[in-house]
Length: 121
Image (cartoon, rainbow, N blue to C red; front, top):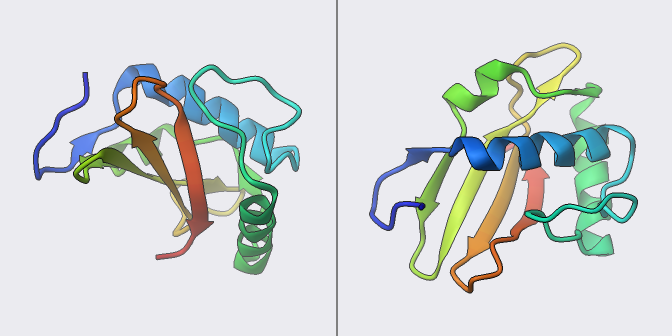
């Protein structure tokens, strides 16, 4: 159960595997997540996927599987109707990069994380 308060909280363990699988798809170039089936992650709109790909390319480093250190900084927070997830990415040059996944989990019973963006805040 996710908290509904004004505090930032660590990403629960049950969401970490789903996020790691999503990042694996991003590494392979599947930014829409159309070549994978995830129970907990919604497909990414093609326009958002293009933006994600462009932002990662502009960052100048190659994505890598998530380093365990990212979970020390990854957080979620209740935002009055949904939970906002912020998860740093790992690159081949940085265990914890400045690139951040911005995703939302609506409070609608579907329990599917929706990726909104990947960018440097």
